[in-house]
Image 1: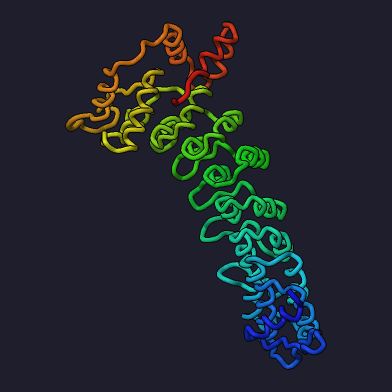
Image 2 (image 1 turned 90 degrees about the vertical axis):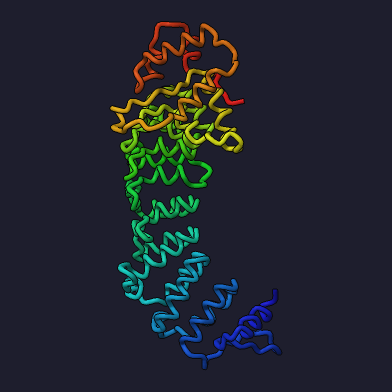
Length: 392
């Protein structure tokens, strides 16, 4: 597009700070425009991408004055740049803004921090560093959620990098008490495993539980099976009960009907039949919501339950004294489990029955270490970790 056409578009959009001498094809900035109109014209140029018009306006209207002399228009202009503008444009404009203006209070934070929150929310990583350098707080909050958590939850990994380079504290928790690892696990960021490793090396505790009592490994069991193995390598307990319900990661994976997480947990040494505070095993959590036999979701749960029963998963009768509840009526979970047990299925091999007994008698927290410390051939150690398990 010709420069003349750019200016025509700006002029036709009620920007009285700019006019054009069409006969000479030269840019002529209207020297009679008000300061407020000039700032509005700059915002229009930023929005439309006419960045080559910015400097002539600044030279004509703000040679001896500041953009911040028109405060409300200046805030709108800088917000526009923080939302989608480039670092170059921001730096050119900030050169015409009073530094003290960026320290103006806006809702218990400075203008610089407000602009930084806009950049983080919109994923504009290029301007984050410059705003931090001008006083933006990389540890700021948006409605109780830290900027780091906001960047992660929106999948803005480059924004996260910019905040960390600006001095953000990786160990901060959000308003729910969850650390950054849990937010990474629940995000749509692709490279979660490496990012979790990076956060741990930066001081984030992979075993820290949120206000809901769940550690990152419980969150991974629900949302991201790929992270589970890495957390176990970081010394997280694959059988860790949560604080509230004593659900293990396998309980949560079965409750969510997450096939990939169930398979991953089994192959890294999760105990099959530990019980939570309600006396429920992981299998009970799976079939608890499979009562409607014509529902597709219930049919899927039943199919998974049949495969888990074949590998040694069981349901246990609840102890009314343990749960401090009086038993009333039928236990539909146990009834469904008993019906599934009666269905015809292949007879388990002696090898498989033997490994179930061995696995059941090893310490829950050190299953993998216990298995590989046994004085048996290596291929038998591998077999004890259920490498053959998979959902068909």
